[in-house]
Image (cartoon, rainbow, N blue to C red):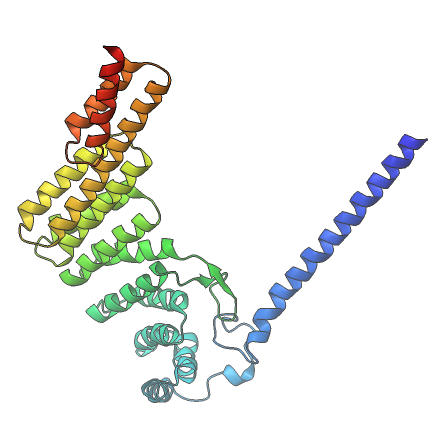
Length: 339
């Protein structure tokens, strides 16, 4: 009887907990759906409706030429919301008109000026998909600025529409845009910047191998660019971080020294050489520290011969580190104990 009563109470508590959880979820869902609608008192653009249930106020009353003229005036006056509505009239209701490509491009610019780089990227991608689109330097420069904003932490809407909260990370979109610029017939300076920015973002994402591959392309494809020595420096930093994470793997030190040699050959007088050498010194300190710690471990285990091996390796391989004196001191002490 008692066990049945306890089971009854357990089931009742579980049911109550589930009901409370469902209430919380439903309230959150309602809030999620209502908040975006409350952000605007009117339709912000043509994206949510695609013309199916658009209110009458957004049906065209003027010619595309007049809408474009009005939109251009608003744009020059930095009234980007009004300009967006004018250009949107053209892109939405006059898709076959000659002004449609220009209007689509300006829609992207309006979104960018309004602080919606994700929607700007979408609009410019649609512009690029149009027939006879002009791939100008301005287009790729704008897309580069969008990618940079994503790489710097600018988030995108949970849905590609205005009014929704910006919660999603957009670093994957940044990588896509950087790669697009690198492979497109764009300016060499912009390509170098996009390639370096892609490598830096991969580094921030801790994708070290891909970051190194990308950064090496900067110095190979653009050896005279100002970002070439910067790419060598960032590669050295990556090797240093890898060495700190895996102090037993000396392959990172070999790679770092090869990177330093390539930098000296390509930019012999650049200040980055000093910075790269400092990273190598930090790596040597880390490896020497690891060897010293291992020697101390074997000392405590009373394995003097093994300890001497590690101290000797540290002295031989890393003679310019701060652990030389420590290793010599331990070796002297071990020699006295063993004599």
